[in-house]
Image (cartoon, rainbow, N blue to C red; front, side, top):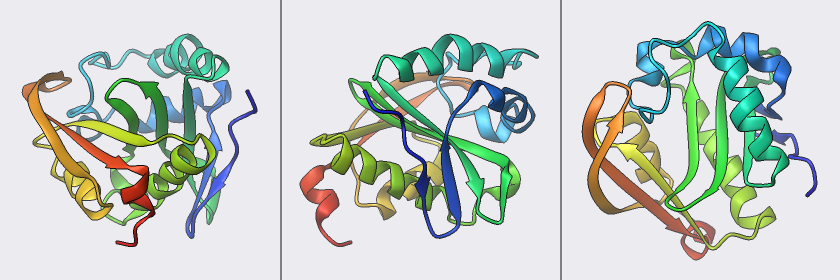
Length: 181
């Protein structure tokens, strides 16, 4: 398996996650506005070694096994600063996940990052469909899915950091993604 590449958008650098990113993730990630709609597997309150444990025991081994691809999100104007993460996962009904630190939300940055990794999913990895679960109350994430041509295919219940909510499953096929929108 070849190494996860750096990806670039108009404003962003997506750099493959490294163990050395743990300190920056530990600073940027554990904010209620970031974690509240994430899977309940995310520990809360977030432990002091949460980022290091996640990278060392979960993300980096999955990358090495060729089952996941994880990038830190950085502004081209400040490439030394990690502002979020975006990931692709080779899992049933869970192919993309992300988070962005609060001060950078609402600027369209995640739309850019999502477009870059979705292109990687379909063009480089050759996948035929992307499915993304999300908490139904997560309106920002829902709007991103709608803007990028995804469609809601199923709703059920899910456990999130902030409790049990309706969980929506969004999908886009390679053919749909290739169509202009």
